[in-house]
Amino acid sequence: MTSPVVAGALTRAAYFVSDSTGVTAETLGSALLANFPGIRFIKHTIPFVVTDAEARSVVAAIEADHAADLDPLLFVTVKQAAVRGVLAASKAVLIDLLAGHLTELEQALGTTASEQLGNYHGLGDTDRYFARMRAVEYAIEHDDGQSSRALDQADVVIIAPSRCGKTPTTMYLALQHGLRVANYPLTDDDFPTEGLPRSVAKYAGRCFGLTTTPLRLSQVRHERRPSSRYSSLEQCTIELRRAEDLYRRNRVPFLNSATKSVEEMSAVIMQTMKLRA
Amino acid sequence: MTSPVVAGALTRAAYFVSDSTGVTAETLGSALLANFPGIRFIKHTIPFVVTDAEARSVVAAIEADHAADLDPLLFVTVKQAAVRGVLAASKAVLIDLLAGHLTELEQALGTTASEQLGNYHGLGDTDRYFARMRAVEYAIEHDDGQSSRALDQADVVIIAPSRCGKTPTTMYLALQHGLRVANYPLTDDDFPTEGLPRSVAKYAGRCFGLTTTPLRLSQVRHERRPSSRYSSLEQCTIELRRAEDLYRRNRVPFLNSATKSVEEMSAVIMQTMKLRA
Image 1 (cartoon, rainbow over the protein chains, first blue to last red):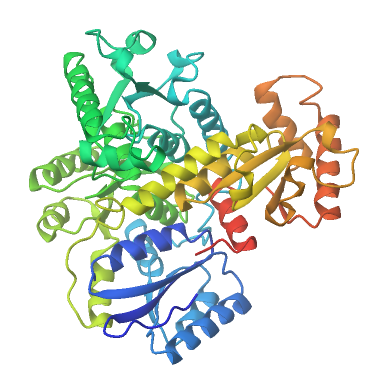
Image 2: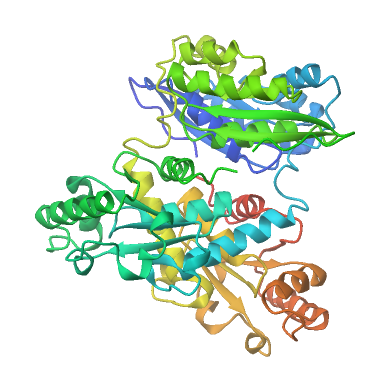
């Protein structure tokens, strides 16, 4: 996907090349590039580059971008020295996210690396696989208060008004960390009472609340039901105020999701609920 | 969680310290450590270390592990030089996963970093947030063939016999990449016919199949229904053979999930279906 160069804007190609999924190269590389907001980057993630031939096809793509004045950057997480060598011969600036640190580690540990890199997740990691599968199925069953069958087994119960981010956060905690997370929507029915909704009250100690800003909530709800009472700024303001009162009255820890990513919310929840292994 | 040192086995503490969620530090650090299978690592992930005080409490934990002969390693993704300075003064071997690369980038780009690191996901990234939320909700609605309401909007339809890994892979693609993924279970009813199940046949071009090994499938199914026909090696063998025949007859690309992580399966699916942006 080479896009045309935008006149005026400085544009560079950025390749994230991995012998595994490329997620780490893409995440760390993008985090690094986020420090250069003045430059536009056309990003390409290329996973499973394990042979010289695969590396050469990456090099070919880089040459094309180079010819198009996109001065490619090349972020690499590849363990095979031979493959890295092919990539290093390209016209790109190479940022090796692994090799250097591996050398530091060999010195620190006084032993040589086994080149098993990439096996960290994947092959044979059956326990983690089971845990994640169970956790995701648990999350689906207990999403949006649909079931309370195994609520007693929840590591966390996320409570919040509709559209504050319960579901994506729940799924992330299940997938990334194998945690059993239920979530329960707070509706107008839940507010007359002082306490937590009956079905989650038993698990008050495991409840975590989400809130957001009325403007943001209204914006998100418009996505679903444009210009409805549900998405009106007035209704959103009332629901959020009531939810936050409920959290405080019942000593339920909570966070504001308005400016946080799913990853950040999940990390805060794990830290607050002491779920970090 | 400091565990007792196992007699004989070489054990080291490993800290993953970040000014953000710590996911990148933990993933890359663990991938690096996976190269040293002879050493046991007691891992600690500490997110949101942004103040000197927070850094000093990390240093205190490190000193304790050092006193316990756990010779700590410290993997750091922290942008603030001051905070990194506090951590660097600890008794741990410091592996800085960012600072060095940032310097390389500043040279390559001929400009200085803005220190906005961490803003890559999170603050203001509203579009990505909406995309993920929609994708996760889509995945839940269209999980396990429960709905075909918006099947026409699917980026991928994952088909497989029960317990081959459809659901976690679906959720990962939705959460990590914001893709609309439906999944559909292949049951004995689907096999008499030559073609794909009626409800997904229209979308044959978007179907991707999963298979696994009979032994693995039987093992996974035992988790759910011990010693049932459903989990018997014989039944698993038949279902997988029929599923693979179905994939081949209908030119549905497929992969074997037995030795792959959710991340790896997702990357293969995106690559095969050309969904990598």
